[in-house]
Length: 247
Image 1 (tube, rainbow, N blue to C red):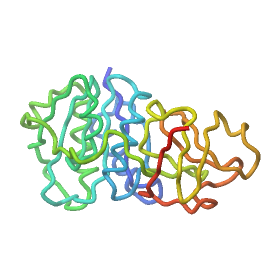
Image 2 (image 1 turned 90 degrees about the horizontal axis):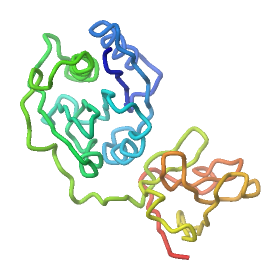
Image 3 (image 1 turned 180 degrees about the horizontal axis):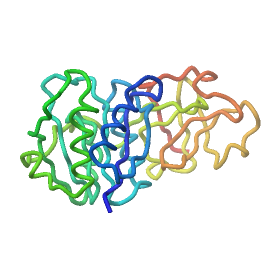
Image 4 (image 1 turned 90 degrees about the vertical axis):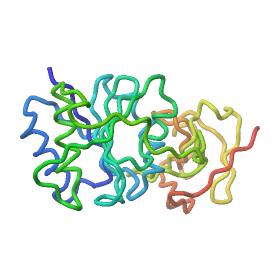
């Protein structure tokens, strides 16, 4: 059976882009399951997306091909990349998107994609380059047939292991941070937008309208308001700093 292909992008579901990529995948690999993993990753922001991608990956099949496209440098000098990281395959731009996965990996290899399709638009490598590469990997083709092995992706050692900042806001107005909750003490106070927040286990632990932090379903520190929108109530923005203080 072909490997499943998962799509992680900042394209959004409106407009023609996701549909075109899925059409290309299904044309080239019709027996492959194509899964929409996420299409509202932080736009134009590979750094925030890198922390989010690393937190989401453990929930996905062990042999999945993940086509990850947050690519503000599309058409420029950045390399197209294939990486095998702890058994999963990743296809996308070499712009830091895979930095946290690579850093935390037990086993990892990378290849620069040297193959090019007959048609390659300047602005839509998701459809024209990354989708065909993902389709080939899904059907068992080796990366050596697609590219040349590289020592490693472009590295960003200045990025912290855990990022004390807002990296994503969901449809409910909850704000995810780049901090893994496992490194934050349960009695710690989180400071954001000038407010000190204490931990709750669930939304039901706090009265309506009160703000708190908790460990979300993918293991990150998340800021929330019970029955409210934390981003609106607290005035949170992507990239906003978060402080952590011991209890």
